[in-house]
Image (cartoon, rainbow over all chains, first blue to last red; front, side, top):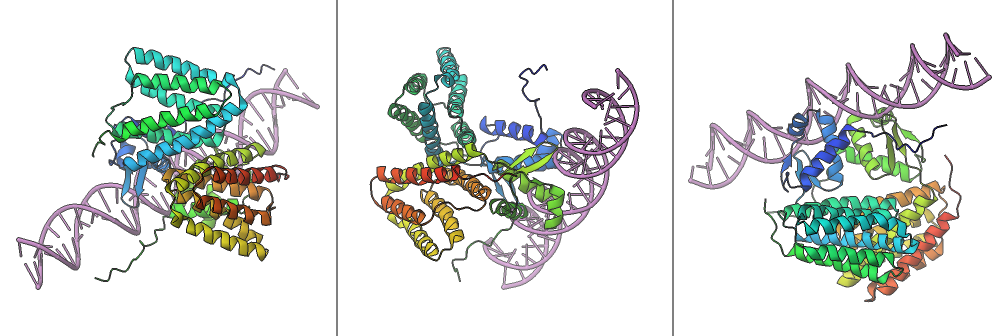
Length: 223
Length: 223
DNA sequence: CGGCAGTCTATTGTCGACAATCATACGACT
DNA sequence: AGTCGTATGATTGTCGACAATAGACTGCCG
């Protein structure tokens, strides 16, 4: 029988696309922290009933991108400096664990997508497209964790990445680092290709520590 | 004014209590892996409409205790040996990070609840109440992570604990370890009270590694 | 003029009904 | 006999309406 390697057909559950839409709006800053998202209003704009909207909102609440106050509504979460530090603490924990798994398995083939991302990041940086760089930065770390092959680590990391993006949106798009970003990812990738765990962990710590330090000293946008 | 330290009145959002109810049923084995949970059926039993039930189910789906197959229903997730290993890998990552924070802060007051739990665990073990021991075991680790004071670590860990409980339910209530459990927690607590990080991490690794090894060699209940 | 009670409105929370989708069982055709 | 097509049944997905709650406003009283 003709058993081509067909990927399962693309499912489009309505609440999922609604959640994605709203999430995108949150992390790109269209919905600044503190804004109330009324389900009736969203339902009208998206031309669906309140049911799916409610379901989507509830999903985002559980990701803690939104905060639900009973009988009052859902609001875009507001992150203070402590939260930023906390996000990066959690990211460090997950990335370290992922790196351990990757080095342990020593499967350099899994690192190839990472190499491509660094490549593209370098190109984007040279052309001054910093918007792309920050996007590729997130993608790099996501792919890194996915490469560990742990469903749970990946699951936890997805939420953290969304919160990271929210932090940076709250910083008014001031993407702090510049060319060092590319260098740091290159070094991390090289370390991963080696067999030693310690330098990998050092790279991760350094990378995230620098990021959180730079974010911490920028002024938060008040809403 | 009479300002007694009244805790905020207990909020009871319906979907929340439904989710808790179902979660309890899952982790205590009343709903074995693979069973379908029809929302209509649950709604009737709980004497509420399908709306809140649907919301609760969706919450559990996102915790990955349930699996939703579009237009077909939600089913209790089935964990294989790989999943068990994965749960414990993720737990290790979170607990290590939490332990780092605790040792770093060196606030022994936060460890007092842990000491009490170990105390009670010891008592329960002596009285042969292994059901209580396994419960206190979970509580210990939950409180441990909470003691780190990181919202995100706590959030991630809650899901992992639920999955852990599910694993053990799938093992037909065969709680593997016995008195060593109490000893291990005592040693972990002592290590936490010290200033050194390395022995703490060693304790955690040992504890979780032993657990996953013992679980791995038990037969999984087929459903 | 300030504080408080009562009302009013907007929003969420809940419900029951309809429509769409998928699985199963049966029958027809090759 | 096996396979395909069709009918049926059950379940999810979606919708609009009702009820409950919290905040805001107004008017009254001190």
